[in-house]
Image (tube, rainbow, N blue to C red; front, top):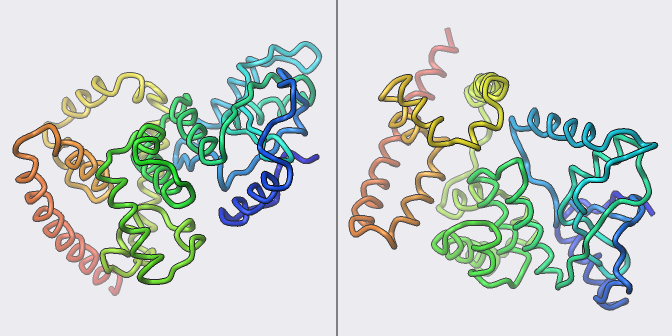
Length: 318
C-alpha cells in the first residue's frame, strides 16, 4: 500500500474516509501496533496536511536534515519519537510526524517505524492533528492558526471551544468564520470545496464585498524583496526568533524606535494586529475605542496603499 494517498481535494478526502468508516467501522485493529512498516502509513494532506511554511521552507529542510542525522544509518537506526497515526476505516493515516516520516524515507528505513495510535472520530483526529502541529518545532504563524481554524469550521462539527483550543485562536475569530461560512453557503450558494480552496484572509475579504485582487507586478516585486529579507533573517538568526521573541522585538527597537510602529501599521501585519485587538476586548475597558481606531487606521492605510500603487504604475509607464 502506498503511503501517499492520491486524493487532493478536501471534499473528496472527506468522502473517501467517511465511506471507509461507514463500510468497516471506526475501531482500529487490535492489538494496537507500537511499530509499523512505513508503507502502511498513509498521508492525507487535505485533512491532516502540514501547513504552508513560506520562507521557513529553509528551516523545514534544515529540520529534516537534523532528523535524518539523528536517525543515523539504515543498518543501525536510532528511531525518533513515535509518529501519531489514526485509523480511517481501511488504513492508518499520519496525523502528526510528517517530517519524521520523510526523514525515515530519506534514510531508506521502511520497517519498524515507532507509532502511537490516536483513537477518536474523524473530527477529533483533525483537531488533534492541529494541536500536535502547533507543538511542532516549526512554529505556527497567525495565518497558519487562522487557516487551521477556518478549515475545521468548514469540515467539522467541533465546538468553538474545541477549535479554539486546537488552533489557539480567539472565539471572536471563530464566530466571524461561522458567519462567513453561512453567508457563502446559505446566501450565495458556494460549495464546501469552494470555501476549502480559500484562505481565511481571502474568504473574509470577499465576504466584505471586495473582489479578490489579482497579483500585480508591484506585488510580485514586493514578494521578491520580502523573500530576500526572510532568507537573510533565517540565515542570521534561524529559530532563535521563536525561542526568544522578546529579545528579538527589543533588537528591532534598538535598530530604530520607529520600526515597531511602522511594522504594526503595515498591511502584512493587519491580521495579527486585528486578532490581538479582538482578544483584548475581554481584557481592556478601552477595547471598543481601540477597535474604532483600528477601522479608521485601516481606511487610511488602504487609501495610502492605493496612492502608492498608482504612483508605482505611473513610474512604470516612463
